[in-house]
Image 1: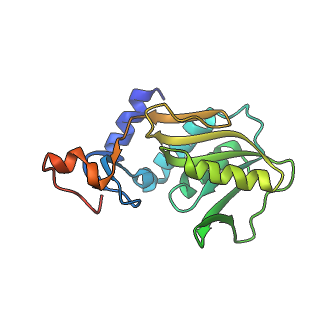
Image 2: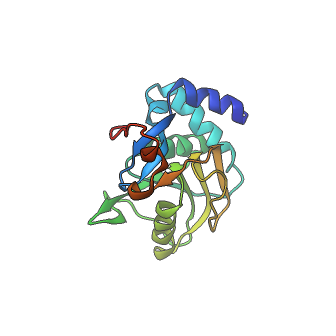
Amino acid sequence: MNEQEIKTLLDAHAVIRPGHFLRASGRHSDHYVQCAGLFRQAAVGEVIGRELAGHFRDAGAQAVFSAAVGAILPGWEVSRALGLPFIYCERKDGAMTLRRGFSIEPGTAVLIVEDEVQTGTSVREMTEIVRALGGHVVGVGCIVDKSGGTLSLDAPFAALYTQRVEHYSHKACPLCEAGIPLDAHG
């Protein structure tokens, strides 16, 4: 699929919505991105996983690694498409950690999959987990790159769709200044 076909699919599932939104961080944003709707229908989720996996077929990955909760389904679908084991991390006491019996063996080549990225903070946290356990990251993939293509990571990176999503401090938000109502629920 080309980027326009991906955009059509994202639009059909209301993945990216313009407006004035409150983020979990407390910052305000000009778009709301929620990839979960792509996975309501198994066939659509499978297509997304296959498309993302296509960017990493030759990366040499031995496992796919995602973060709970939003990236579990994209990670699972990429792992299915590549025929690789799947593991995920989750936050405990504020830190990303492997739980539920998941592990990464030393030397394992890991593909990180996210639903969306903007600053790359969670990707960097997952990269540290992989490195601490003796593995290495061979690629990072996501459905939506909210950085507008400016994200810099330590591994090859691919996104199915790229769009700049602006975010602002609540103290200096031009959307608030323009009187646009804040949607706290997305």
